[in-house]
Length: 310
Image (cartoon, rainbow, N blue to C red; front, side, top):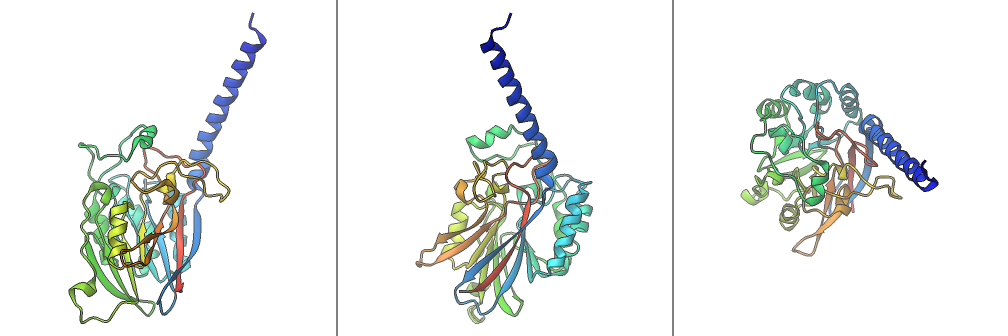
């Protein structure tokens, strides 16, 4: 015969198991597709006029994700001045056609992009708890993805490929310089400078934007020290599985890089060597690895940033 204490323990264990199962169902069936558009204002000293940037990242597309596809297509209704894609668009080799279909409305606007590791290599299963021990590492037998097919389509649409490269363009009446790097998570980043460094005869830009996939601190510092006004990155998934917080956006436990968890998503500033401060926006991302399809207190999102004169 069981004692009251044993019965209470069994009941408590059953309740915790049921609660855990319910949380997993919510994280996979509800939160994973609770697509959210964030809006944020970014004051930039000396900027002569406003600029609206749509920041998208970490789509991690799997063919058949029709709700994600339709939501991405509707982002075109925002009519941004500029689209910045900070990588990890793919999850499978056959994802490119649907990714291009999803992004077709956005490819009508000026844009730029950099790669993430999941533009090069398909994800592999790993123990989610391993992220608590430190950043992930590329598997030596990872399957390659059709990076060239995707990026060629982006370039043909007019988006600038900033893979260890820089460029300049007039956007919404502003002269904007861009500098991007290959994925720092793979240690493939090489800062190439800014267009104005190579041609001092060019007029001073109104804005300098740095672009990277993983917001590794040494890369953010390089951009800040070189005069970037704004740096855009993704990779962290906002922590992906977070604790509840008063902000409603969840409190991240990990970032999968050396960025502090407090900066896993949203805006923060990095001090520059000249005494100034550079804005950094880290996107919480639109998808997850196909091998870990859950989000908790961290819905998928894109962000419309409105840069304004300070």
